[in-house]
Length: 144
Image (cartoon, rainbow, N blue to C red; front, side, top):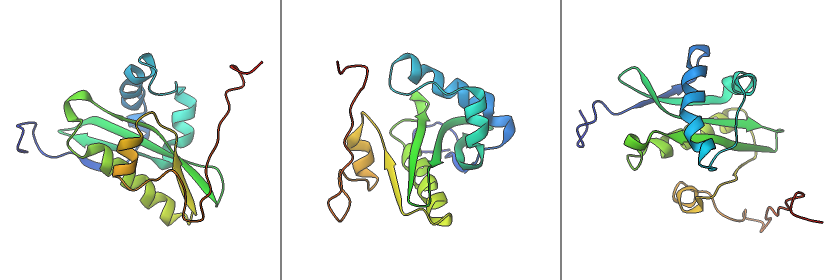
């Protein structure tokens, strides 16, 4: 049992087909609140080879996916952790697992688009890369 009485510390592993429904259920509250984008079952299934889950006592309590766009760039997506497990390092371990997948696949850069930049900075992300490149965005729905 961990120090906060929540059972064994969750383990992080690669997602399996039987995790798809649990991943959708975990993401959904964050979609409703506007913190994550909706993910169709087919999209989760497509990303399954690069999805990781945190599991505690047989229940999925966190997830994240690494979407690989090319050998140069991948993105951490759909990072979600149950409210009860937030602040315990689960999100950090999920992101680290995604970075490990990127390293295994020899992806050069990993990005995250987030409203919680403090979290991603705490796990090693930064606003610029070593050579000062930056990502800039425009919302075409907001521009006339």
